[in-house]
Image (tube, rainbow, N blue to C red):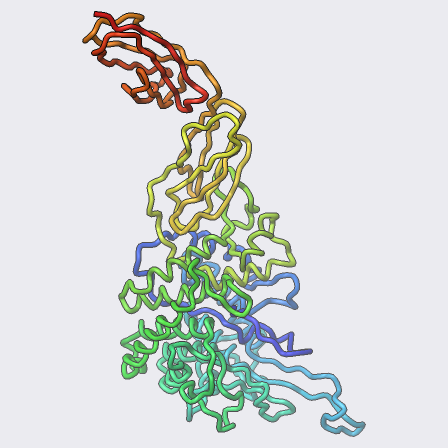
Length: 589
């Protein structure tokens, strides 16, 4: 699970939000027919969350810039909340250095540098390469001129922690280029301790390289070719991308490629974000820096997509170190769908669709009269099964909001690939049940796969997530006698209704001729049946007629008699041991 946070110990907690996985916007639209409802619903909830363009929540020390960028990219991918996209972009531009740059001191270290009065604090400062690349991608997606960003409070000749002079306009492209190695294309943090580069504090990794490759490629930067090539070198033979380079020190002499690495480990999030970057680059196949790399990018993306599909669970989810979760499932599903679209193939539709169904099953959406989730939470996505269960006691608690924000921001774009309904609307329910039966099973169908389905059973309601086929089965409690009617709804309206009639013991009423001449017909009229109840008529143990009662509970049987003698007439209803009538008649010459 990739979060939009990065962590260092102690005072570095305040720098969280720069380096964690984020999202790539602007990739191709779904190739398959999709149900746009869940993505639009999720985007509407997410768009309501920022304050002054930034996301804040309990437990965070201030605006979460990284998560706000994730939200921008998610909303941009859905395409229905442009005003909020613009608001977030404006806020990120105004606070870009608060996001990318840092400066702080660690507590006094007895072994630290000596001052006039003994050991003094270490000063840590720098600029995040991944944060710079991520901010650049988001502002490019929002249509901002990234060569002239004027952050609040920026003044002429003001030096940032990296030592560059800020004349009031920031060029994020040149800043990212300065953080990209000319020899290898690798991005590297400008991480300093007491003014000296500190490799151990360089956290730039494959996720950041993916952002950088996309951003520099979109800008047609002279650094783009090497940045893209370095990203491609992080792909391993199996198709996945490793999460980290071999060493944080770019001058350590350690291998810079996965092919030469020892026992590399696959990472779903890093691979998904790399694939999203490759999809966006391939979608810009007329960009000069992309043209000579087109075949390499296409081959790498095909391999990454194939590997990702091997990591998908049968239910559609993807797993990271925390188990099945919306973040990894969202990134992987989005990447597979985007890659299929840009490659104009349906080969990845099924996998993207299964991921979307799993996410939709974790989206907080009510149906019909089932109001399990708070109205204010409609559209949010739960991280996992536990958070989904907690949300049923909604509204979402303030202490938990950050998890739902993070899950939603990284999962909502994958909902663009949600399958449409495949079955006709309806509810299947046994027409009858015998007295003493406690429950029967009702099956609702016709919802979009994964959509919420509500069953109304008398005064009770039950909300569940629909299956991959858009159906759900419920246990229906029955009365001791009479009719129970149930209705089923999905998030768009009524799916259908059905009723079950509980039948008790009853002696049926028969009207027939006491004597019938040989060769003539006997007519038996049966009353006291339930509408639609099955009926069987037997003479001397042999079935002569069968059918169902009409709407008035009447069934008429006519049959020919060919042998003289006394006849035993037996009529049974739905349950032969409970509902029957026995009579006799004669056949004469």
